[in-house]
Amino acid sequence: MASSTYQTSVAQKWRRPVKQRSRLVRRSGPAHSRVEFAHPSEQEFARFLDYYRIRWHYEPVSFPISWEGARVAEMFTPDFYLPEHDLYIELTTMKQSLVTPKNRKLRMLRELYPELNVRLLYRKDYQQLLAKAGYGALEVQHLRKEDVGEILISPVELETRLRALGRKISRDYSGQSLVLVGVLKGITFFLADLARQIKVPFVIDYLDLKRYAGAQPQDRVRIVRDIDYPIEGRHVLLVEDIINTGFTTDYVLSELRRRQPTSLEVVTLLERPLRRLVNLPLRYAGFQIPTDYVVGYGLDYRELYRNLPFVCTLRASVYDIPTPAPDRV
Image 1 (cartoon, helix red, strand yellow):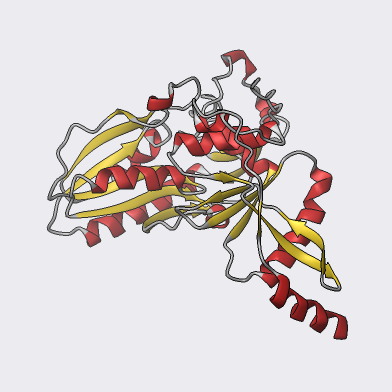
Image 2 (image 1 turned 90 degrees about the horizontal axis):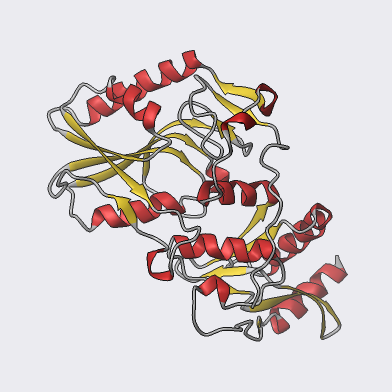
């Protein structure tokens, strides 16, 4: 107890974040190509952030977390800082053996710096983000029954829940009309079945986002298929297939708000609250699911499995993507 009290007293006096030297190696080109990263996985995550126009700093500061007397004995340096969200992110993709010590350091960091907002992204989280953000489609012959793991949501459960969502939406918008905006492509089945359960007048429109892979710097993020229907002064319901970190939905909402709808709400088939990095006004949700990669009912992995009539997991061996080699600088 005395040791813990001493540690805390020293920490209060000496716990000053230490600014790290810049890792900038280029002054032109995409942001993720200008920095010298310690591991290719970090560069891929930076590319993901660039895609959504999320400002980031790579390893900007180190936080002292243990002391020997008045001397700092151990420090923790989060991989990324997102200033717009005041959020630190640490990746755990290099070695799974590092997960336990990183969790230990993260607990110490949170105890000593309770004001910090910090999240740990595991290997599975990271790989799913990359798969969602632009790795190419597999050939059709790679589709195998043994790839499918556990069925999480059956066709009957999907039908029952969508009927309930349709009733709630119809009550909430009684006497009004709606514009349903679907984000392609995963919402195809969900939007079609949900629309049949909504009893108020509505129109359907779609938008699609450009993937970042191979894009020029000025085109890393843009809506390539915009909605046709004017939404100014209308009640808009954004239809999503799944919400993980919330970055995609947050970007789309910001674009739609500029068009001054009367109201703007979100309905999603699936959500993972524990993955959320961005606060979202999520009004309607179908199911909460675990962290396993899921496919079916419109959801894909590299363009496959959309036509499965249920939502199921994929075996880990399917999405264990080899980490790409770093860009030459």
